[in-house]
Image (cartoon, rainbow, N blue to C red; front, side, top):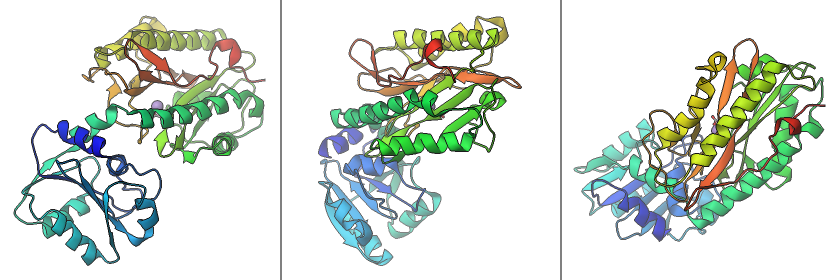
Length: 366
Ligand code: GLY
Ligand code: MN
């Protein structure tokens, strides 16, 4: 925990006396709270962590989470009423005149409340520092992401066994989630996307009661959590009788992904990785402009953990960042293909963390 707190303060552009991380009620929970306190379990609704520049931290927790809080090396204060919580916050912050808050993780009502109970202090934004600290994963975080990726990959490889004509998108999403938890995941990392046929043209399609037809492709985008850390994988399965268009789209997406992965290494600007994949897709006239999203994103405690491969992202890649690489081509009225893998940036390149099969011959629906 101390190392993480030190890392967060080292990323602050402006010094401050304390950083306050406040959880609201589910789903308004701040992943940075769990990151800083090193908490693998527990919900911690309405709980607060106060980080100090000497690398110490105080966790002000409700009684509900008292036992889970013991897993943190932070100093623990337990409250049973809101007044007790507010008094504890005021006490820990009594010598602070400049306080960092996480603009990306605190609700409007929490910041209003904090401003009401703490007077005469300046609040500054610690959001970027938290994102920067979280982008570089430590060994413990990498191990958890690796496990989450292993499970998602194994479940992706089993999709042809469970996918059959007449099954609905709902059923497939449920089976994928069930299989990941059966293998030891604590939950899915986001609502599973299962899109058949034309619906695969919609990158974030929500499953429906639609049954797989013989001419449909099947796109599945899913992931799971291990001790809060996420995996995120997409595989698109080809109908048994694939059209020439499907083959061309599939091979173009797969090649775009390989080119991007080959170029990932420390020191490269993230926009350049997006460009390699996008240029490859755009070089084929009929697919130009059909990759309608960024190439990828950071992955960690949040499925979109900060940082991205996009035309606008100026992040310089560093060792131990974990990113997704997910090119896609979407053709309205026809369908789409996306292939997504997770990579760990290493000293000289990157390591693939998801290993599910993805050659065209390996992703057929029978
Ligand atoms: N896997 C869903 C997304 O990255 O948006
Ligand atoms: Mn993704």
